[in-house]
Amino acid sequence: MPGKKLIGNIYMNIFNSQREVIDTCTEKLAGHKKVNLYFLNDHGFNIAQKDPDYLRALNRADYLLNDGIGIKLGAKIWDIDIKENLNGTDLIPSLLKRCEKAGWPVFLLGASKPAVKAAAARISQDFTKLIVAGYHHGYFRSASNMVQAINRSGAKVLLVGMGMPLQEKFIDSNDQKLSPLLRIAGGGYIDFASGMKPRAPKLMRRMNLEWLFRMILEPRRMWKRNVVGHLQFFITVIRMKVHRGK
Image: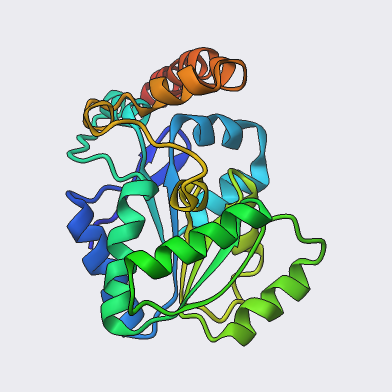
């Protein structure tokens, strides 16, 4: 099992492949051990610099995985070699296939009401033997009531897609109360699984250009995050590296 390595002020697990992540998580789940699984991109890194609670939640993760070309290049500045992009949208379907095979029920939490409903239906179609124990949109009022509903469902796996930093904070703050053993902060996976939000073509994904595809679709919302945010990220990791070397 890979240990954690420091990138700036965040400790991230360095796995060699998606298969290694899936094997590790399913072994933990089969052994009745809890796993909080999160993903880190440069946008999340930037948020963590301004949000101490989010920073602590990321550093308390059982597994924090690299997501995107920004983190790969930032890790290289910190002398860490990342071999494979481990974004949640590609990794989660493979995890769900393992859940289907093992008979582990899944609960979906996040996105809008129509999106999570459509995602639950599509996942049930794609993984015919997978038990979708329940689902709920991400705009609930009471976290306590939501945790109770999740626990009553009997789910072994919880997939939360409420965006950064809400999804990680929800898992972290309810860590001791949640019954599902595997808790995944899935970002936009529920929206993508619903079919209501398109993914980048496979060629762009292989070239680590999914961020560019999203910026083309939503230029006003994504411009600042992808252009200004990328620059801010690299300035921060370089500054932290220089300061650490003194």
